[in-house]
Amino acid sequence: MAKRTKEELDSQDSDIDVSSSEDEELQEEGIDEGDEMVNIDFDFFNLNPDIDFHATKNFLRQLFQDDSILFPLSELADLILEEGHIGTTIKTDGIEGDPFSILSVINISNNLKTKAIQEITKYYIEKTKKSTEFNILLRQLFSPSSKHKIGLIFSERLINMPVETMPPMYTILLEEMEESRKKDSEYEFDYYLIPSRVVKLVSSVADKELEDEDETTSRKKVKKSSGLPSEFDYIHYEDEILEKNALHYGYFDFTHKNVEPDARRVFNDYGIEPKINLILINKNALQTAVTQMKEAYPYEG
Image (cartoon, rainbow, N blue to C red; front, side, top):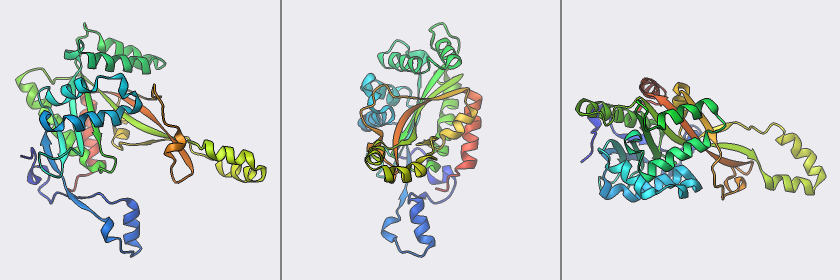
C-alpha cells in the first residue's frame, strides 16, 4: 500500500500537471493541445527490494552516466533498498509498478568496508583533489576513526518528473530518519553527501566546422556566438537550494565521456556537456534546505 495518502501530504487532490511550460504557453494563446496535457496521480511507497532493484540500478546508471562502470551497481542498489528500508519511491501503477522517482540514504560510516562504498569514497576523493578544503574534509569524514557519521543521499528520477514532488519526498526522508534515530543511531547523521548532475552549454563543434568552411558565414555567426552562455544548468532544480546551504559543492568532469556534447545539442544551438555535481551538507543545513524547497516548489498534489 502507499506509504503516504493524499490526506497525509496536504489534504488535496493528488494530481500534478507534468505538461511542459511550452504547453502552458499554448494554452494561454488559446491553442488546443488537449492530448498533450496529462494529469497523473502520484503515490508514495516504501522501498521494495523485490520490485525496485532493476529500476534502482538504472537510476544509478543515469546518475553516474558512463562513470557507472566504476561502481558495483548491484551491491550499491542492495544497500539503497535493503538497509533499514529508509526511503521513498513514487509510482503511478501501484506498488508493483516501476518507480518514477527514488530517494534514499545509505550509512557510509557503517559500510566503509563494502566494495560499493569504498568505490564511492574513492570517487569523491579523486574528483575533489583540486578543491583542497573540500578534499581534506572528505578525507577526515571517510576515515574509520572519524567520530562524525555521514550519509549518502541517493536521489534520482525520470527526466520529466516535476521538481514539486521533491519537497514531500525529502520531508518523508527526514521524518523516517528521526523515527529511526529514536530507536537506534543507524540514521543519526552529522553530514550528507548528495551526488547529482548539472549540464554546461558549450559551443557546437559542428557549427564551428561549418563556419570555417565559409568565411562569410563565419563572420556572421561569430558575432552571434560571441555571447555564448557558459553557465551551468540544473537537471535537479532543488540542487540550487541544496548548494546555497552546503558546506562544499563542485561540478566535476566525468572520468569516462563517451558521448560528444554535439550529440546532446539544445535546439541546434549549443552542445551539452554533463558534469557530476558533488554536494556536502550538514544535518541542520539539510533541514533548512528542505524547508526552503517547500517554499520554492510547493507541492499541490
